[in-house]
Amino acid sequence: MSEVETEKIRLATVWLSGCSGCHMSLLDMDEHLLELEKAVRLVFSPLADHKRFPDGVDVVLVEGAVANVEQLAMARTIRERSRVVVALGDCAVTGNVPSLRNRLDSDALLRAVYAGGECVPGLDPKGLVPKLLPSVLPLHRVVSVDVFLPGCPPDAQSIWAAVTALIRGEPLNLSEAMRRFG
Ligand code: SF4
Image (cartoon, rainbow, N blue to C red; front, side):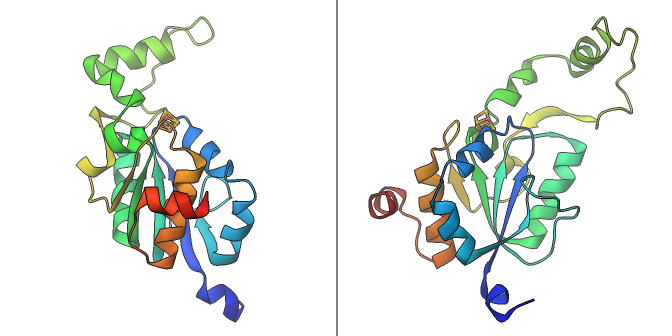
């Protein structure tokens, strides 16, 4: 690993229960992605092919709510191994769309989605998908969160402003940061 690389901020992004729209908004930063690449090393992301969430992450952007046991374990791992945890988008901040299922019976929902279709009649979803939590939860209900970045999705400028402030170690003032980087 080069000397320059070791000085880079270790950035991770995670996709829990969300639609990937927040990651699409991240990519919408367009030419700012090239500037970002100079300052960070992407150590974990659904945009790459990492297999394990690493230790020593400086900043992690978490898209999506916490809906099942695998995501709950992942959220705890993220918190243990990261310095700054950012709830990216309304699903991570409030539960948003995934939490609509909180009014429904989880078992009935699983049966309807996985065993009700004509393609897979009688399929038993138990064992095929991770066990659902009784309720879909926003990220801060399961681990402590350092930064909340709302929006569905947050616009690219907001993400850019937040990420640049965080990697520079500056206080996060989104309106001021967006004015400067806009
Ligand atoms: Fe998708 Fe909106 Fe949730 Fe982001 S906040 S994952 S864009 S539904």
